Length: 188
Image 1 (tube, rainbow, N blue to C red):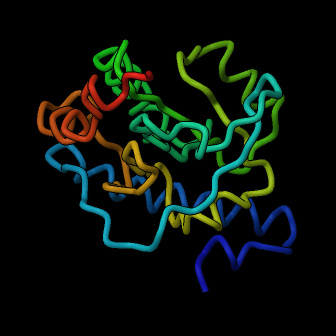
Image 2: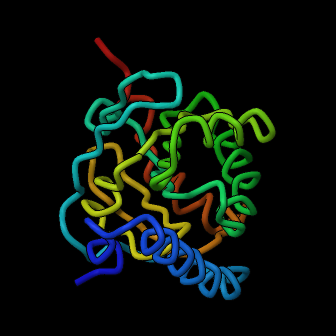
């Protein structure tokens, strides 16, 4: 049983304690992340991801086919999550104009709390709400932050648990190598 599945159906106090434990798991990973790199994916097939963003717009990962997508699970209360947001924004800027997108999946918080955070820290990519933690369970998220790099055909190619410096040249090169070339993305 995973920590997230163990939280299902339990009271609010237990859920909060579980969330703190998930954050600590991510924090311990982030201490080693300064020199860390993306891990090649050896897990199962890419789970479904269908969520609404903070503005109520629906997002379905399948609609991003043809783009490389960084799916980042995070929370406003998670310090390592907050710490890596600027480098994720820089990565998105680095790939501006290319078939690349970031989907930030807020883990289990309410819309009002996330919107309040975004007024202070505006993000330039979609922030999706996983209020009931269904996506976290489907993606087997066991700590925060956790990120998955999905290639243009919709397959997870890399993952990383903990805070990562997304501006690292090796990380950008690994993601850049997944981008479809212009001949492949041109539409007739």
